[in-house]
Amino acid sequence: MNISRKAPVAARLFLGGLFVLFGLNGLFQFLPMPAPPEKAGAFLGALAATGYMFPLIKVTEILAGLALLSGRFVPLALTVLAPIMVNILAYHGALAPAGLALPVVLAAVGVYLAYAYRGSFKGVLDANAKPSETEAHARTAEAAAE
Image (cartoon, rainbow, N blue to C red):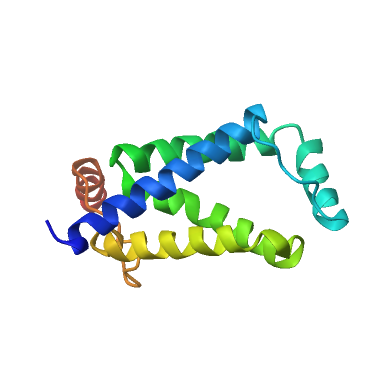
């Protein structure tokens, strides 16, 4: 087996493992985290004040990470994690630049995996996509034509 066949698996396991780890840490705080800068802390405080946003994000990270680790629904997991990764990059880029290295690596791995699974995204990237003709839809159209 050559590197081009092993690299997507390694990247998928790396990204999935990190999202499971940090998702669980977000829920259970078992890893020590440095205090964020003032503006970053204010942002995190606002998210925490909603009462639902952090649990929603962290459970989403865990579920998508588990999908990556299992190798099932990988394109869906990448799609779900994409806005989370963009926000992690934006957060560190704008509010906590000292921690920017890991988010850049995560984003690079995410982009690589999206490229590796690019065949699965063809329909999503079709500018002229049409709805699928289902049997029920076809019957409705036939009834309307009568």
